[in-house]
View: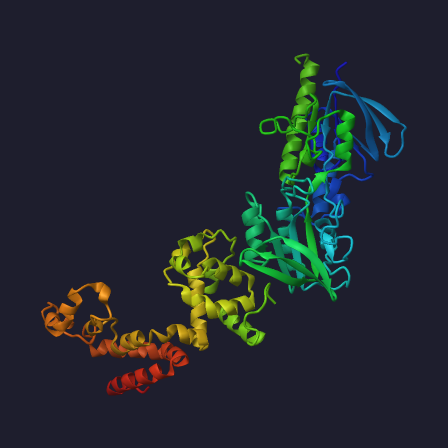
Length: 355
Length: 229
């Protein structure tokens, strides 16, 4: 029997937006989120401001959360996860369980949207990259984001404002040795956004960004990159840091300044690793449970991504956001809208008996 | 501190900083430098970059970084390789590396940097000619041995230079020691401009001897015209 409900897995930006839109279309949505709180990574990892418009992340996410919660057609299950799935497009049977607890309910849904997102690359995943677990003052974008949210950007080991901060781009991205050959798309913009925020919060600090290519597509160029250089005097140096060593009470970074064609060795108070995106644990688990194909990086595979960016290998199961690969928020929200429409259209056709 | 080893560690950081602040204080500076993403279009367009170890991109980049030590190095070693043709103005960020170099050179000259003196040494005669007479190249500079690449007719022309010049139609060209006859009113105005705008002070910084000779030449004329120097 055809079901009139769409299941959305994941309560981050993509899931919340898809759920709200299904509800707005007059259809039923069930949103399942493994964490106890909605809002996904921006909330769970204490984002300060969104890229690219610098809007307060918590405020923006709360708007999405409230819109989904206020929609009478959307039923939200936090602290829950999908444990089993059977059936086919129009008629799936999905078993849910309270996180960490086998007892659950069985629901009938017509379509499914996977919005299980990403996790930040762990710089200590395989090899100790840049001494992340060794030096207190080597942090990641997520760590920096949390300090910026609290309006207290300091040298972690000292608790005082830093004089010299640098970002190292492409940590865990574009790296054949690590296995993540893809570009994570957002780190250039986020590093630049954070560099601006650091210059605003600690005006005396010199901020450097060491990069391979700056990928500031579209308006990120004139809204983030150029102001970072021209207004906030963030120093962009093409050349990736080879290693970080401790010297006295500060860190010494080694690399090549390819712009000037010289090797460099300079002290830094704080080094921010611009870690990229990897599929979240939830994305990998859900892919297996639903039986959708994953690509070689374990993101959900999108077979015809150019013209059908929300389709998965299984009819009736759609994907939105970073579960399908690195995405910025603009693309995530657009994809959520497209996935919601595809899922709702499938159900509408089944209901009318035309498909 | 910059990203590399300082090439001039004997010069105090404060002095380098003072010179850089003078560059930045120039009213043209904001319109000459926005930011650099190292596209290299300026280097591609630069004639000097073809012949010297010179890069307008590095000038813009160092200025954007405010790398005081590197800028001091460039002020001494690089900026004099620029021919000031401004081909680099095609920058998509609308920077003007050539304009930055104009300002850096001016600061270098005003502060009597050794490199400025060296770079301008060869121009003493040209400056003397221009500032003394108000004209640039004069016919009597046309000496056959100095210009072999101009061909055999140079010898022929220079032998009877005075005659050739008098054959030219405008009377103002009937001279060999200046490019043309500059009347006294014009030369007085030029002298006054150079005195009042600080050009004479700049010359004093880089070439004391030249300054003295020019001053003598100018003083006489100006006093005749009733000006106190």
